[in-house]
Image (cartoon, rainbow, N blue to C red; front, top):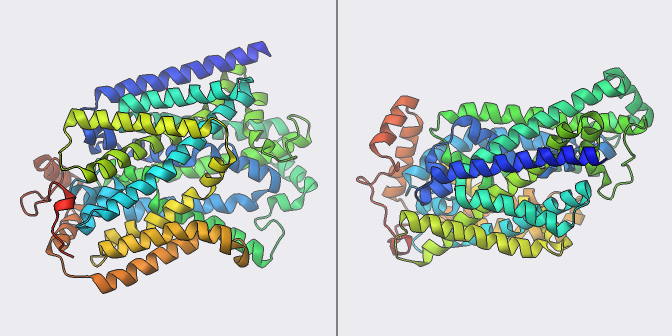
Amino acid sequence: MDFELNGQAIAMIIYFVAMIIIGIYGYMRTSNLDDYMLGGRSLPPAVAALSAGAADMSGWLLMGLPGTLYLVGVVEIWIAVGLTLGAWLNWKIVAPRLRVYTAVSGNSITVPSYFSHRLKDPSNFIRVIAGIIILIFFTFYVSSGMVAGGTFFESTFGMNYHVGMVLVAGIVILYTLIGGFLAVSWTDTVQGIMMLLALVMVPIFGLYAIGGWSEMTSTLNAIDPNLLSLTGGDTSLKNFVNVLNGFVWGLGYFGMPHIIVRFMAIRTPHEATNARRIGIGWMVLSVFGAVFTALVGRVATHKGLIEDLTAGNGLQEAVFLKMGQHLFSPIIAGFMLAAILAAIMSTISSQLIVTSSALVEDVYRAFTVKDISGKEGVLLGRIAVLAVSVVAALLAWPRSDTVLGLVAFAWAGFGAAFGPIVIMSLYSRRLTWQGAVTGMVAGAVMVPVWKYLLAGYFFGLYELLPGFLINFLLAWIVSKTTYRPNEQIDSEMDEMLRRVAMSSDEFKAEEAKDPKGEMEEAIPVPETPWKQDNQT
């Protein structure tokens, strides 16, 4: 047992050292706030795709999804189908336009600043509200990741929960603090590769260990025929709503700040195509790996190869871990453990950098007329990362169920608050800041109202769908009544469409002439949004 723990510890140490080295690399490439928050818009497509995937999936992919499938079967696969479809659409219809539009409209480096610049909000109200939403929800999100990290070390090595939490938090804060967005993106890429390799290796070797494909299917049918049914043997309306809920998860992608920020950072809009193919390929392989890990694990339990995890209460989420420990040598099993930790850490780091950018770029900058210099901007960004981390750690210290409960609907909150506004801002000239603010607030409020007051009357329909729809509807209605022609908005959209239609070489030449991507001569952008004239 000591040999196993030592081998796993060696793998963990190697992983931690690699993350710190990448953080130092990011530090050497960071000189101003744009670099720290957006990596100078220099991400290669593979890095953008893999970092977005790793930041998105978190520990859910290696623990939550396999655990649920282990208990109830492939009926729970619909959420993975919905997420994959949503991610594909996000890369397809949002990524190219958002990459160009955020540069053309005020060189925006955050989602809230993009909303403000794009919609010419004279009060900057939308920027502040959006920044506060990000700040609040992501602080709790980061906290939940720290809880997961502490729990991981406690259950795996018997380490004290608080020691494990501080260890995970310390490593993530270190490479995020010093390396910024580039460090986060490159560490996420390494972590994404680790997750994929682990999710491919476990079911392949596991299938061999249990006797092959036919043995797996026959054993599962003997345990419960419904384990391999896409409906779980239930054709009721309630089950139909459960299947629909899985697809609805895909809508959340359009409003996830820590995911769509990768679109803003990619080198050219044309590279979004390759990034989409890489990212969706990664997702499909990873999801199938999670599915078959669960199915093989259930058979392995039946054959006595691993312990029984069917009692629930979170035990089932260890199926990937138990299979890895059974199938591989201690050091290889250690890297399997590191893959779980990578999933947790990649999400924490991405959320930290987005929360930091919201605090500095959207909340702080909105209330000051002073321009933020390169060094000062980076310093403020690092202070923000540290401040958010401390608050998140304090929330995580007592391992509060309240914190973890909030995360359950945070995906719906972001999707309902931001998703419709992101899409409409890219495709409609008539969206106004008044409509966007109304829709955004209504969508965010609808999520908890639906979840806690109304969902029971509609067979548990996921709160993301009504929140998304009410946002879209109110944004459209209010925009219809408040719309006034705006030459600056029309010109920026025309410029965005022109640049998206360029060839890759033409686009690079255009940005070489205008590194920030702004239309500074044709359409001057006011230095401080609070001083903008009301042109809407």
